Length: 202
Image (cartoon, rainbow, N blue to C red; front, side, top):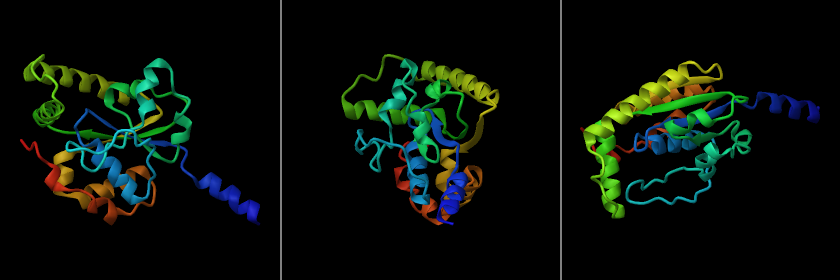
């Protein structure tokens, strides 16, 4: 009987990988924290520590950045978990797995303002490319990624507006729970949303 229970539990575990994606500074860290609070374990190495730009943590996994170089052997470990993958790296996820992508959307002017403030805090230059040029680049990139995602048979995508989630966290926590298909704690998910961190509101 014990072996039968173990077999059933193994079959019941989700075989897909939950991906949190979007442009940098689009609310991906907030979504990762929501999933963790709801009961979905994150795949993260905790190498990048919380700071003034992300006081509640970045939830990054460094090996994600190495996927273009062929480092994808870790992806199988992410089944049943959530991992943050910025939009530019989605195409490097191996095709043998199934993914449910929570894609964060945010007004491009807010993203640019947040990125600029981040550069200022770190003492890096901010004026190499104009905001207009960056906005155009991001727009073309997002169009390309959206088209690519729609063509992938092993990807399901839920697009989520960052500003709307801050205004109605309970509503969107329910949507995420339904999409992921796991019995997440919706109240705890909504409880970690902090409107005070919406610092580049446009």
